[in-house]
Image (cartoon, rainbow over all chains, first blue to last red; front, side, top):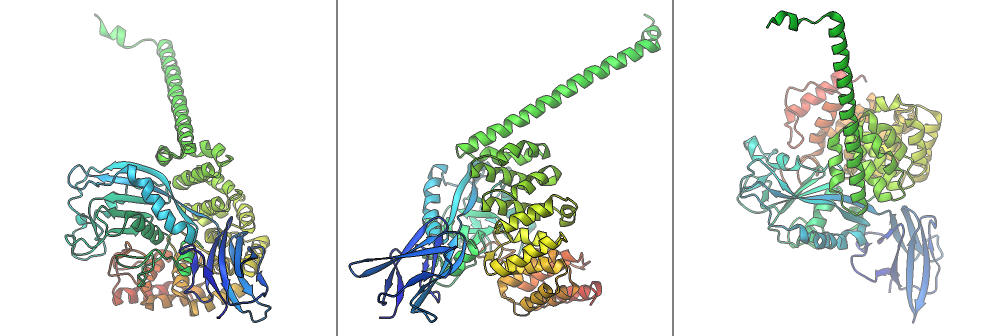
Length: 268
Length: 313
């Protein structure tokens, strides 16, 4: 059996598709992996000022515990070197807090979200269960309040500024996001219906994120916590992928995996 | 009744009346101002008291109260709790302006790296670098913050506006020791190696080697590096580097910026390059700039001609 690291728990910041494999470790925290396919060889950190490593053996199974010291990157090297049996890239990350304000839009007509403030903490907890262990990103609640908008937002709130031939008044994005809390890092606006293409009556967008604001409709296929995590990672600069296992998959249903590149973009 | 005798009192009486009116106005005026100040202080205090209980809605209302709020935030900027200091920096960032500046500079020295980063970003976004450079307190505070481990690209880029041997040394130290670590300019922006913003700043300070290295990066730039360079175009002053960056006007790679996630047609790097160059060089283009749309080949060619006409080789 070739020497390799194996994750003990899925979606805990380990990327087995990266070469070398990669592990996120919180700056004040640790991660433990299984080490397979090697005998009693040394395991060391290339930079103990960034991460330290300790090895324990239980019934012949070797566990490698990586402790984050300070933000930065290093390698865990297995073997005597200079060519190691196996290496693991490690990124030690400080916690990235994204202070988020939530706005429950109501235009007094048909555009009134059915979401409830009382459900918000569960939604945030579900999002954090995805992003915190994998990227050390935490969404924190900065505010949550009903937002009464005087203008008629009609049946569908739209982003249409990029579409030629669509009347400017159809672009309600600016009206809604103009109410952002300027002291928050990220503003989420819950609306009844949102679209961002030429066919506003075909419901094929669940949310859109741009410039620190997200418009998020009521009727989502994926669970709301997962959509919130997806939009949060967009806010942190990550684009869509074609891998269904990824949180950033461009479609539904999506997975919750955050690969190395995405974690490093979201929380460098 | 003889109105004339009532309507024109003698000069001493008129002067006394005027003085009395002035005194009353001054007293009431001062009273109103004092009352407003107390109200302001109370609102700030109430907002931060609520924030200690994890209620932040009132914090979000503080920027609307205007620049007089800024000095009232000083005690919260020195609070024991990092969460409270973070809120104070967020309000200062939203306020901007002269009254917020010294406190944001102070926050560059916060014990928490994340708060130092937020302060550097706020200074980068809310102020003209040339205006910051006139303030003697800013350069040393920035340098100390960078050396203490400010992970923000904003702090590195701003150092380029402070010609000083110590600042150059600090930036070289970043390139040599931490150049491989990742950094960002904004939450939504790309992440790049810290060596890139450090070299942009060094180039601005006249470092020839850094300038050559920048040209090398532009030659084979990843999409993230190219996007970062365009986002930091304000901080690039070398015509040689700016001319080299014209190649982004040909780059068809699609980027995420300008549109909400998932919307299309997506913009290309060349569209972002048009916006960045037009704003950086104040080009008088014969079409409307638009952050969400694609530009035609003719419009892009026009921008290229205007760059050539406005930048020396």
